[in-house]
Length: 199
Image (cartoon, rainbow, N blue to C red; front, top):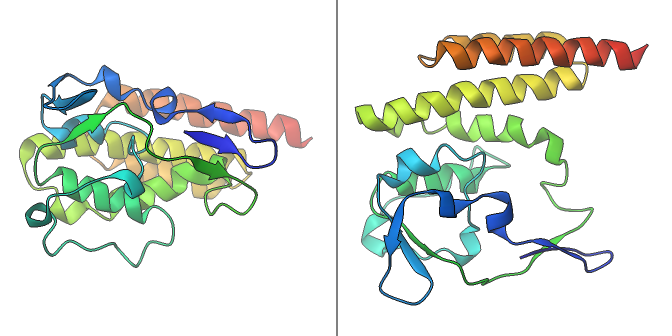
């Protein structure tokens, strides 16, 4: 459950932001638990963020043996780590609230609008471990979207050349032509609105 430190107002649980219930699953062995029915990486990489917090995630030791957080990432290292875990086995979740997450002005992720740029870094960092064809298809689709999202952030901030360069890198990723065209329209919209509001 997320809550605002200043007024202690609840901001909603994780499922409000990331509807994990939309992913096909079967009932698990304990109350309120569910086991993802399909390949967890393919289903979960499609989310903008990992729909859980690392602090309340349990791992089988043998599944994460030798796996470490990427120290080259100052933000999004948990995103990188969990995607690597999802390549290694099955995933289950429960709907019970296990942690209160405090939102305040000093959060490292307080700049929510910049989050897509950090997510793109996290996605790029796992490229060398995505080797199965099924995983590559899902990964590339998400990577194209991540480039578009990050490009939009740069353009919204007036960093048009950086945004266009980021979008161009996304074009080089094999994936949906339709998504790329829609992405270009979105980028052009961001550029035109940024120019309009800066006048």
